[in-house]
Structures are given as structure tokens and as C-alpha cells.
View 1 (cartoon, one colour):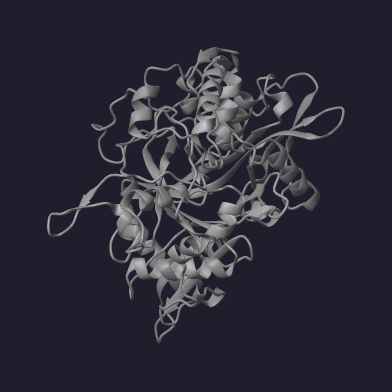
View 2: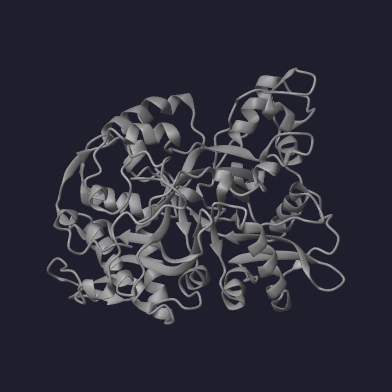
Length: 525
């Protein structure tokens, strides 16, 4: 990252008028609504179109770097397709098969299996955002939203000229009176507990207050302690008189290749969270500047991050797809609803999966698989324009070896023990608020998958089956890498529903040509 520490404008309490759909947090999950609530929703939306400070925008935008991307529900795309005979086919009806329902009922049923998500709409949102003010981000070394990057040559380059660590102040930025900087020691359980509590109480939840992300403590340890991490990049703000943790931003080092260049060490930014009662103190912009200063002191000048909102300027945008695993529970917690003339038995039958995987030799990954699995994935990821590089076996093992309730990975190996196929997902659950029967919504997110001996569709079907065995309720997939192969409708449809929100990918202090989602070979938590 380029230094932000000397930029006074980043601390200004500048006000902007921004629509809710582009600059406020998107819902974590939302339930399907009826016509009787539409009027209230419209009033609520108008109320939210008000002037807010740049501090709240910074909180909201960055609080969602890796949260708005993980929406658990979807709204089905209703575009028609054409089959081989030239006949127009409804993809939803095709997914439902030959059930004894009208086409309209099939459509409604499939849509209702997933809720609505209040998201920005990808390219359309980018165009709309060009006409809005982004005064904080306009001070940062990122391309402007209206900047044409299509003519950037090769792999691009830094937005700001490179400096040296000696150019960066060794002193932390000034905080409001009564608050102090700390480096969170993520090896200490009590400090992990503090992070968990801050996120649980103040991170993103849906507009209807029904679901809230629940980053488990084992998940946080996994996410924040990769090999070679820098303790000072886990930046906290404590209240001086009480010692309580009131704000957080984290960074970890990652190797990223862009448009064929040798992998660069970047900082992956995550978990920007400010206590709800502190969001008038202009803490979020200062957090961003402070972590930037600390990263620059390590002679690292680029960062990678994601957000569900449009900021200057996405290098790519992807879209989430969602597959119901446990429709009974989803309906019971009002995650989705049962359609007229659609019984619970029919609904369960629609999403039923086989009891056992079909891929021969598919088994959990072990330590002995790490070298060949890393090689397999590395060769696969090279085909993508923006991709992660696991630099060592130790790093690969950290991210990919199975951890109960955190990450699940499976492989197929040949007679010589070489891994030929790989599939994986990580676990990120949500707390269900106000339901007496169910307290947790169990969700899986597709991680990295490579299919050689079977089709990718067959491998992912087996992964759905395996996820069900770990009590997953809904399975989520981005349309990155080659995932479209199993997301498309057809005779072998896995019954994924397309989401209506986009996940924006960003590079900090790096200007390069735009990348299509199929050119992305990186999944950020």
C-alpha cells in the first residue's frame, strides 16, 4: 500500500449524499418478503438516502470488504435460454425438472428458496457510482472510477511512485482523546475473544436483524495467523480508561500474481470494524491510514481486498450463486418460504442429494498430500489473470488442510500418490436472531477446486454431498475460475440459484486492465 499517513484530507469529516445501495452495508442475509411489506421497505429505503459523514462511509464500505461478498441468499435470474432445437427454455423450470407444477409455480418456488439481497448491480452500479462523491477514496492511490484502464499496457504498475520504508513515519497516527493504538496478539485466546466479541456485536447483519455473521474463534485464528504474518498488522484501538477493544483492522501477507507478472507480496485487508458508538469519532479513516503506514514500513506497497459496494476502482467483479442444502431449516427460520401448491416433501425432494459421493478415491486431504496438491493447484491457477500463489508447502497446508468447522478439503490421488483432483470449502456461519428452535445457520463457501479425472460438475456435486454431512444448510459459490461449468443450467444442473449482488475485487496502488470474473483465481475470506 502507498502511504496514507501524510494525507490530511483523509481525516476530514466530509459529508456526501449517497444512495443506500452503493455506500451502506449490504444485508448479510435477508428473508423473502410479501407485498404487504413493500410500502414499509420503500419508506425505509427513502429514509436511508440521507447525508452521512465520510467516516460512516469508510466504516460501512470497508466493514464489508469480506462480508458483503458472503451473502447467503439469492434472487434467481429469470433470463430465458435456447436449447439445441431452438426452443426457448426457462432455466428455472429446467432446474426443477418434471415436477407436477405450472411453469409460473416452478419459477416462484425456485426464487423463494432464496431470499433477497440488497446489493449493488455490478456494472450498472459502477456507472452510477461515477457520478457520486468518494472524497476519502479520491485521496488514495487507486484508479478513479471514470478512469479508462483498458489501455494500460502489460500487467500495469503502481498508481503512486514507489517509496522506501525510510520515507514512512515511524510514529502512529493521532487518535481522538481517550483512545490508544494496540497490536492485537492473536496467539492469545483472551485477545481472540476480544476480536470475536467486537465483530459479533458490531459487524454486519441483515436489515431485518434476523441473521448476523458469526466468525468462530477457530476461524479467526486460521484467518489471522498464516505463516509469516506480521503481528503489528492486526491493528486495534482501545478505550484508554476501560481498556476495551473498540475498533479493528487486520492485514496478512499474500503472494498475488497480476496479468502474468511474478507474484508480488501484498497485504490482504480484512475485518475493518468500529464499535457502533464510536462511528462519529472519525476512527475508520485513521485505521486505514495506520495499517497502511505499518504495511509500508515492511516495504510492501500493494494490497488486495474485496467489497460488496462500489469504490474507486474495482479491478473485477464476481457474483455469488447459492445452493440450498437444508430447505426445511431455511424455511423454518424464514430464510426462504414454502410456495403455494408446493409441499415441504416436494421441496425437500427437489434439493435432495445422494447419500455418498460418486468420485472413486475421494477422501480428506492429509499432510502427505500437501506437496503434490500444492503443485496441482499452482499449475491450475496460472491460467488466471489475477491469482493467489501459495509460496510454500507450509503456507498451503495452513490454508488447505482440513480443520473441523473451519475448512474442509478433499483429494483424489493416483497409484503413485500424486494428487489429481482437489475440492474444498470453508465454513462461515450466521447467528439466527429471534428463533427459538434454531440458533445457527451453517453456510459453506467454495474455496479452490481442480478436476482432472472427473468433470468439475461431478466433483462439485460430491462436494455438496460432503458438505451436507458436515451439517451445512446452504452452499455458496462465486462465478470465478471455471465455476460456470457447474453453475449453468442443464440436464446435470446442481440447482444453484444466481444472486443479485456482485463482489468487487480491488487492488490498492496498482493500475491494470479490467479482469473478467472467469479471470480470477483468488478467493478472499
